[in-house]
Image (cartoon, rainbow over all chains, first blue to last red; front, top):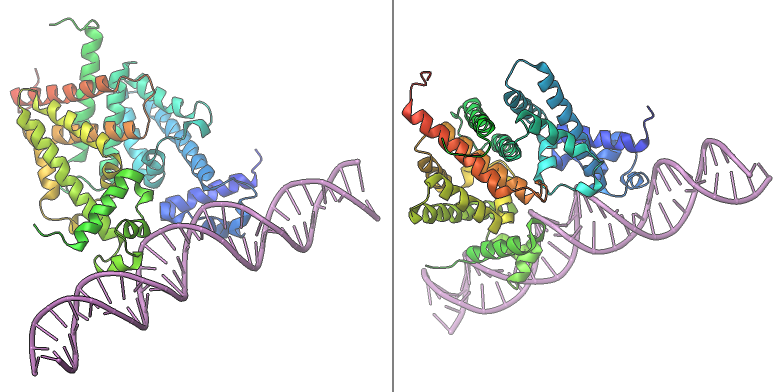
Amino acid sequence: MIVTRRDEIVEAAGVLLEQHGRDGVTMRAIAESLGIRAPSLYKHIADKHELEVALIADGFVQQADAFEKALAGGNDVPAMAIADAYRTWALDHPHLYRLMTDQPLPRDELPEGVEERSVAYVLEALAGDRDCARAAWAFAHGMVTLELADRFPPDADIAAAWRTGIESIVANVAATQNDPQGDQK
Amino acid sequence: MIVTRRDEIVEAAGVLLEQHGRDGVTMRAIAESLGIRAPSLYKHIADKHELEVALIADGFVQQADAFEKALAGGNDVPAMAIADAYRTWALDHPHLYRLMTDQPLPRDELPEGVEERSVAYVLEALAGDRDCARAAWAFAHGMVTLELADRFPPDADIAAAWRTGIESIVANVAATQNDPQGDQK
DNA sequence: TTGACAGGCTAATGCTGTTAGCCTGTCAAG
DNA sequence: CTTGACAGGCTAACAGCATTAGCCTGTCAA
């Protein structure tokens, strides 16, 4: 597998992002960590935005890999396994996670299928119920961003809130499955 | 009620935020909309951060007011009323909403009680169940940010996902109420 | 040997927040 | 009245940001 200069640039940007957060990712810093000057970067990438898109795409792949591993584990309730993996991955890569979710997704610029793969695992874990999958996804995303932004009080039992949320939604899936037409009782 | 120059500055910043998004809020733009020059702003505020904190504090008040009005409405399920108000307010003030949630909350710099008031309504709507309140809050926050970031596919029934999520969590509250010790069946 | 091109470079531009230092109008104290 | 302080403007300037223009050099194919 050949490593182009562009790949090196993206990787350097990724390292800076993890280590120094979003503000640490400047064109000068990226260039410096490669031993060149900032304007030279533009021989390989169009602009900083393209760099961010590459990082985001990378993030989706990593995230989907984490989901896959979690589901493969097996014994757990699938939804809970995904939820754990979601939280763990996000807390392990806070800056990348925020980069991926802070802004409208630049779908057109992302490689085909990269987003879908990640979403597919969530859908699978919720037995294909789209509304529940979206609710679970939103819940997980909300939990993570609130935790990353220190919005929960210090004494909050965050794990309990996760269990409560996921169990509630899973129960709803089960109910819908048993009673697909939504007939009453 | 006296309006200080500082108030005018904060208000001008708020208008710019609503109209042109976060990037539109520059010290020069704020100054220009008041007919003065950027450096003069520093006679009234310490730095841009202080300005953002003021906008955030304002946002919490607005949000809490919206919740209050929603709960006062009455006939609905309280949790659903709050959820609707949450979504509506956020979609009406997308830039302010993001400013409020994008970054770790600068709690020390916020006026006392401003955050608590907003949270209290959510807790009230969930019958005081803290885990469920946190789950519901995270769910709502996640739904809003995903919607604002265009993360749902165009054909997604967002309202249905809201209903699914809130109903799931409310059902869980009811269950816990009836069975507070968590005994089985 | 020539010519093209990849990939560096410096210099410069226009944006950002922010500081230093100056000036002027208002207003209270002597 | 006059004096002096101060509030609140101002210009000039700085450092850091992404980015562009234009130049130079080493490599490699024709």
